[in-house]
Length: 427
View 1 (tube, rainbow, N blue to C red):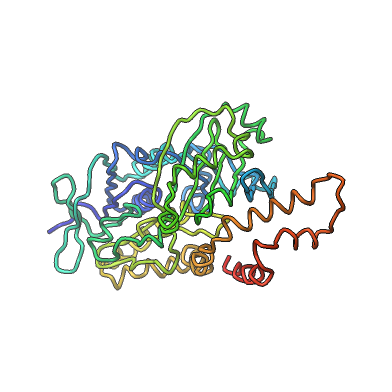
View 2 (cartoon, rainbow, N blue to C red):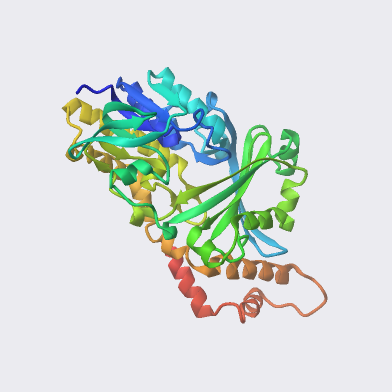
């Protein structure tokens, strides 16, 4: 039976839009199906997008896309209950094109990205749930959606971390709790002038904060990003660690918001949005089979997220994987062969890019980040040491080494600290 489309892409997130846009630009007939009322409707808040992958796909996309602020300054803060020890990196190089990273609100951004798919000649349809895959023998030949059968030569599953299509295609089972994190985010409204004065930025410059020590010992950390007229703040915590600690993610976010240092940064802000989402953090060790006859996995559905404790990257991985899936689809179209053998070029293409290379480089990071001392002992130690060094109360002073040894006593041994430092090679 003749196909209705050369390709069907399920999910209008970053990976799905990138795949559909690339396919349409290549001249393929493509249908992009989104379950939400419109693309972006299920994406409440946002985060930090590193620009390189989308800039390659849509040069200087920031000139037309609804981006927020390009991140000029990055701050890493180790938090104790009352204090913060921070390291700040600021460079004017990140304030000129091609920009290193932009903060975005995905509800706006993905709607724009889907409009680019339409401009390129693709068809976008929303409010439709893809119920199942169509199969003939061992080949995927389309989808069942909205009670109808829609046939295609290729299906690209971009339906997120809980990809029902990946499971139905038996490419993977659900990610286990050890490979998942839970992100809880809030968007807080704050006037543009207040943001610029409080964070010492001008124009569209922005700041990104990473917090460690804000999760009560649970594996994870916090973040705060400046948008044009709002702040995105949240925590990302390992589900296994969260369950083991019998903690609630919402409480951890409240703790971060009420921390003395953070409280001053968000003072006067009005809550606008709240969301939670699952994040695949298993790394290369949790990578599923990426292809089979007539089907490819992209973005979160493929587990393409990389967390090294300082950077949490998923958006650039999503865009790049969508573009590479489209390239694999193009090659399959040219051969007239959508078999797994031909579509295996998708994984080969990913190995030529940063996607699988970076996941391989940080293959040991998930194990290292399970170290509980990273989320309590060391942030407390850093803050206590800085307080000891800066406090002047008339008592006899100690040099840095003496102060460090005194603070370490009863908290962590020198041998244990050295082993942890050696383990940091995973990062």
